[in-house]
Length: 195
Ligand code: B4P
Image (cartoon, rainbow, N blue to C red; front, top):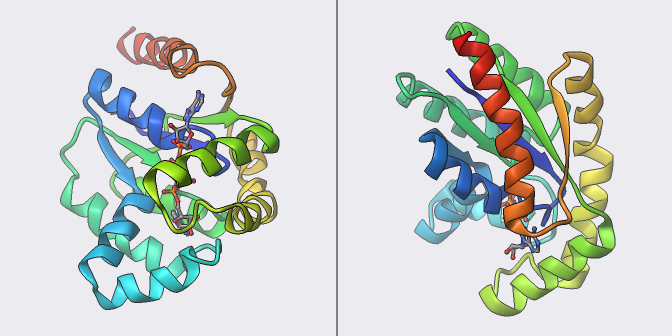
């Protein structure tokens, strides 16, 4: 089983690269951002709460996101593996993910950290906001998301480095170039699992 965490700042290419990964490796895609946006669209109580945080560029509280993820892991226990996209985003989420996987006799295979500088991130997200109209893709909210990333999410790099799981991927090339670096890491992992 291959359990991959795609890690990076907002706009680093997590969602973009996940799409390519699912196609090639047939893993189950878990994007907490997509799940939360679906809840908002459906008008559910959870969605109403999530919207209050997302529209200000804050993280949705850990309890909500962890519960959502727990349900999903249970429902898809027989898959080939997961791509966790945008989860974990806090140390508490990271510890919880390790626990949940361990309970099912699984572990995280690798954490791919997409490294892109803040200037490029702001540029990408402002452009996406102009096309998609996503309410959290405007410059003021983007800056808040970036500072939340540096304060609450980036410490996870150290958490995974200590477990020898962290692999840094230069995230600034074209989508294809970034994917090529990712493929190399995963193919190497898969060969190790088979051999
Ligand atoms: P997410 O949906 O995870 O959104 P994101 O961080 O902006 O990244 P995304 O994956 O969508 O974009 P990508 O980098 O691929 O989260 C949204 C919000 O939900 C969070 O701010 C938070 O409030 C909440 N949330 C989600 N998960 C949570 C959790 N676990 N805990 C608490 N709260 C949570 O792409 C960005 C743009 O760059 C695209 O337009 C793309 O086309 C472009 N791009 C990608 N790769 C490129 C490249 N190589 N070159 C040029 N452009 C590129």
